[in-house]
Length: 346
Image (cartoon, rainbow, N blue to C red; front, top):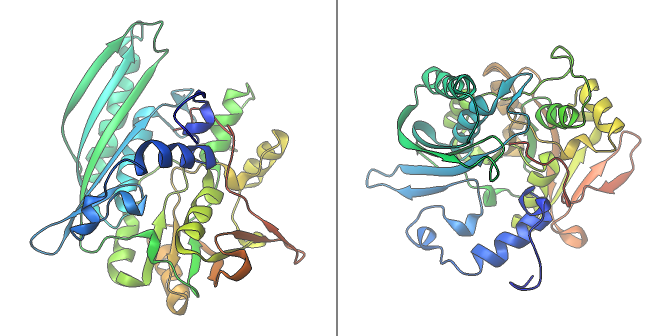
């Protein structure tokens, strides 16, 4: 990828191959990773946030994100709840306990005050329930011909005793998912396609993942990696992990939890649910020797549908790949997401 002769597409923000190439060209090739030389987690890790080591041995965890979803209100939540939970979850997935947040709201001229108030109250309700302080932020109003609705940008801050870094994944580790996958992506996609969605059969799973912190604290270094599968879904997370660590990740297809409604809508629209976003689930890489015990604690933390879905193996000829084993015993490559799957989902 070069800097001339091409234009950005929606695929460049979808969390797949195009976004990886864009960030490699625009950011990683130009910016020095100073944090890693200081003992923190910086750009080199290409994780959902960064950490700065503190004198007492703990780490300050920082994440930044921007949220734009169409429609703004959907079964299970709205853009306010999504922004608060998404930012909190990025800190949690790095092993941090969220303590504070800053937000910037950019709203289009013509949006009514009731909509703005509802979204902001939804954002605040999550912060109150999680004990996260709102420190400040900014608000901008844009001309109606330059923005159609509302965007929320956040910076979330947390404290970690021990950061979780995805590059620690190794041969023999097991992969755990904390619940059903693809709920959020399927819900937003169905609404964007004009399909009728009943909240009883299909709704976003957006929620905070802070209950997992007690599992992380108990098991320490046995938790090798953690990520919430947002843009690009499970496929994006596992492909990134395999590529970073030079391993092969084998997924047992029959064990991956997907709701029948999500699978049905995905098949109707020609998509694989493993590429659809979740906003209230986590993917964990854990030491294989204690995986069953970790799973029991994840279930006990409030994730009854958690299960082990795969394992990490030595790379060899499939180094950096994800293999999906079907229920009849065959294998296929679960490729990295590419193209524009579901625009404006988070």
